[in-house]
Length: 118
Length: 113
View 1 (cartoon, helix red, strand yellow):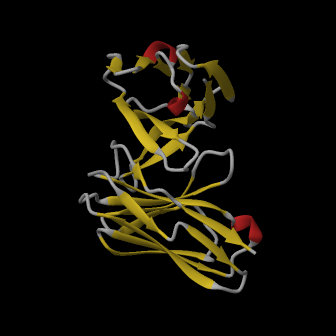
View 2 (view 1 turned 180 degrees about the vertical axis):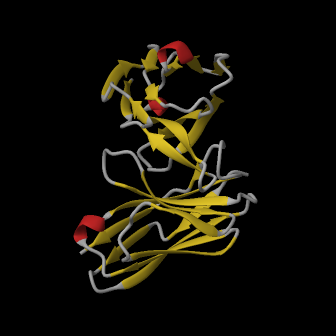
């Protein structure tokens, strides 16, 4: 069965520190997709990145970077030089392909609450 | 423009009321979703519409009734809800049912009294 584990429930850092959010997944599919979402206190989930299972290239977008390693089934997210505005709940998710209905379902981890203090 | 809109933002209803939540997207997306999210928990999938047809119902109680009038609109009709149904209801859409990111609306915060 598909599963996503975010072992860190809460992380607190001081502004300008680097922080890494861990995500470990389980799937028997060879084709799958991984995502990160941010949920600030306002409540809306904001899409950050999608990665497919055949693309292990790491990605950097400004202060954000992602490290995808199939060998360890991990898709970790690093924020460099964190800012107060980065305070939010971050969800890692795995897309399950339901072939009978040709529909993908998102399997979410439990989320990591990041607090960045000034 | 990756905007999904939801109305209302907040809703308070009694257990005997009938109300509806509305979701709209104009991105040409062919899959739309309803999620329920309780505090400090991840979103839980309720329904998926794929090309305007209901493709997944995650064993949701019949007091929740989804409707997809057209490719841009998604409704969730509520009737005889229970206090434990109080939650944030999120709508999302994606270009295709498989392999694409979902874009979420701001949600409707529902309180059942």
